[in-house]
Every structure is written in C-alpha cells, then in structure tokens.
Image (cartoon, rainbow, N blue to C red; front, side, top):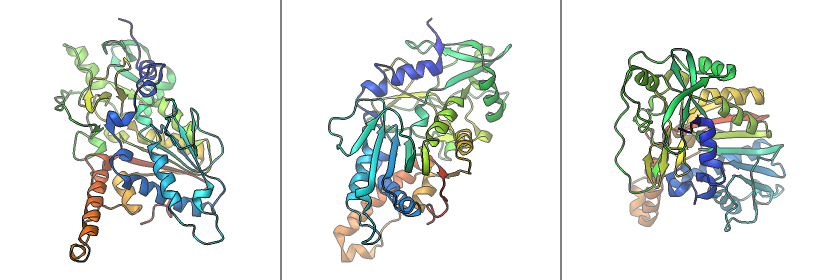
Length: 388
C-alpha cells in the first residue's frame, strides 16, 4: 500500500495538476453552495459590502477578494448588483466605479469571466474592503490522527483505494492543537450511520441532524475494519485543523482595513462530531473519500480554532453567527409576502413568494442555514455592519 498523510493526499487530489478543483468543470456540477442556491445570498453579501463601504469612508478602490472563487459566481453577481446601485449622494463616487474584484483560485480563469474581475492564485496584500471565503476552509487539506497504544499517530491513506493505516507519531505542534481544540473521545463507540440514498441533482453538503452544525455526523467515513483496535480507531479519529488555522490567519493578514468573512459548515470544541466528518462528493452524490482526484474531499471546519487564529493575527475579537442569523441581519429573512399583495399585484406576489422560498433554503438550520459566518474585522466595528 502506497500510504501517505491525509493532508498530502487531499492536496494532490484537490489541487494537484489533475486535481478535482483544478482540472474539473467546477463545484456547481457536484454540490450546491449558498452562492449557487439563491441570488439572495449574493444580495445579502452586497448589503454587507455597502455597509462596510460606508463604514470605511467610501475608499477608492474598495476591494472584494473571493478566496476559493469557483468560477467567479459570487463576484459576477456582486458586480451586477454594484452596477445597478446608486451612491449615497452626488458627491460620492459610485461603488461600481471604485469596486476592485479579485478571484483567488488555482483553476484556470474561465473564458467567459468579465475582464473587470482579476484572477490570481494568491490573495493580494493590503486589502481595503471585504475578503470572502465561502466553503473554502472545508477544502483546505488536513491530517487525520488516530489513538494507538503508543499514542496519537497520523492516519495514512492509499490515494488510489482510500485504505487507511496508522503511521508515525504526531508532531509536537499537531499534538498541541489536538489536546487544545479537541475533547477526549467517548469510551463507547457509536457505529456510523448508513449512507444516504443517491441524489439526482447536486447536493448541499448537508448536516446529518436537523439540530445543526454542533451535532453533525459524517455519513460516509471510511468504514473501520473488524476488531477492537479498528473500532477504537474509528471512534477516536480526529481531523487535525492546525493547517486550516494557518490558512485563515494567512488571508486575514492580507486585510489592511475591512472584514474577512468565512462561510462554512463546522463545529465547536464542546461538540465535535465523533469519528470526524471526512467525506467526498461527486456528480451530485455523497461518496466515500478516496483521494484519487475523482471527487471533492471535504471535512467540516473547527470554527472556533480557526476563529482564534484569525483574531490573533488581526489583534481584535471575531464575530461568529449562523448563516440564518447573518442573513436575517442583512435583510434576507425568508418571510412570506403579505397575502393582501395577491389581490393588488398578483404577479408581484408570486415573485415575492418565490424569492421567500429561495431564502428559506439558505436559512434552513438543517442545511445551508446551519453554516457558520465568521467575521474577522480589521480596523472597523462589526456590530453596526450586522445590525438588523
């Protein structure tokens, strides 16, 4: 078995020369993110952009940098919204004339991307404005650790088969992360749930429980073998998030003034999912996480650990909200239109009802609404930006 660390296997499978995100057609063909689910998501982000623009004193340029931009879907939508917006007064240059859009992505630039959107493999420095990372951190490669009789060891994986085996001991840095950010596993293992039925369309990376992110369980974790040691390895396995902390701290460090926003599914220390969350997605179906480049490999984010890393870089506190709370604060509450509108403007009522339906998908706590919004300010206050 040609086994390597999961972190290295993920990096090659997702971002290598023939990696899933580099050589494929894009995430939208395999799963739905909030950007793909409804235009209401981009509209809410644009409201945040507008409020942040005012808080920063209408700077020129105003940056929006999207890390893990896919095919530029969010930036295209923001450009269109900015083009149709008016400035606060005649003396202020319109945002559309000051907006500088940058997509950060390892895949080749889409041929139909508007020229106004820059395409780069690294975030620019000295950002003034908003840096976004929507479902990026869950694809930042990470290691898996398992307990053994000789202590914690990296779980190695054969990229061609997904077969796993314990490897060498954790480095002191990763062991410190594990003991700091992960509670001791329970003594009695719970068998993994049965895989979900096949889907017929791109799926949301959905929570297994209606109660949201803190109790999510992986549905397709690599099945443990027979015996006590394998059973203990399954229940005790931990996804080591130190690399994601470094990644988030790195992009936060690129913001001079503004906000870094991460939107992703994840968990907090007191209720980490037992056995981890590592899984795969391909062609609208959840599949076993075989890191051979044929599928998305993803694991939920330890959002509290990531948040602490960003706050340390920025030197100020972060704000953590559910997507449901964040979108409501930005005016997307999914409320049904007044029934009286149906009598005075039937077509308008139907449009408003359809819009409310798409917002409901974004705010469903068992799905996209359970995502976390991590806002890390730099030189600006968040409270006024997210006030309802």
